[in-house]
Length: 277
Image (cartoon, rainbow, N blue to C red; front, side):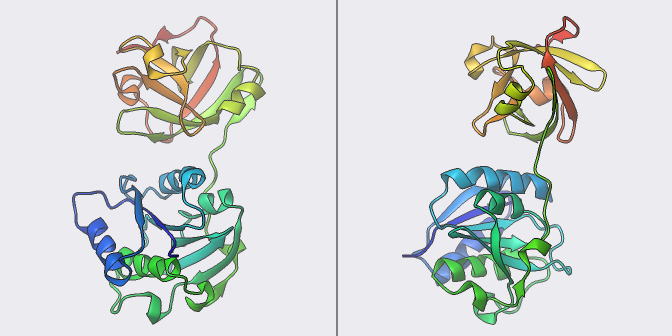
């Protein structure tokens, strides 16, 4: 049975790039199922692509082929690679976009450069390896071809990585970063629910969130609807991370937050102002 391909990119949907990659896959292997995880990764945002891909692993089919194309270095000396992790394969550029997912899958055990003419189109464009290299290689593996037949072996320990998001935890305080903003304006933080316990904040219901010199008071809520309309809150999102949300509104705009901003979460001290639209 052919493996399922899980496809992620920063191509967006305004251009033909996603459809052309699908066409390449369908032309050679119409029986292969392709799941479009997302094509809305911010342009050239390797770390965001890596985070989203890793978060999808727990819900992906067993022994999938993960096809990730966030590739600002396309056509340069960075290698196109295929990596084995657990029962799965990951295909994409060697720039770190695959690294968090292979960690979740149990670690990279083997890796190979994608070089074989049997696993790529010819000629290969210098600017569209998604079509000419990565999609064909993903199909090649999805149909049961041997990983080692793709090209030269690589040392998995030498592959590029992106840092895993983390938080700095001390008593009653968590330092973390904004790592993503979705289309609703929900602001995902690098801290996880377990960090609340480590900071002795798991029983706290009202939090002070500091961004630089600004401070806001947020109530911890379980659902968006637990906050009043237009009210901001702190929630544990579906990925298990802390997130700042606004019921019926856009938290990123309301609190003027952007990806990479440093945020400190702590128990309420009475300072700051209530966050509302």
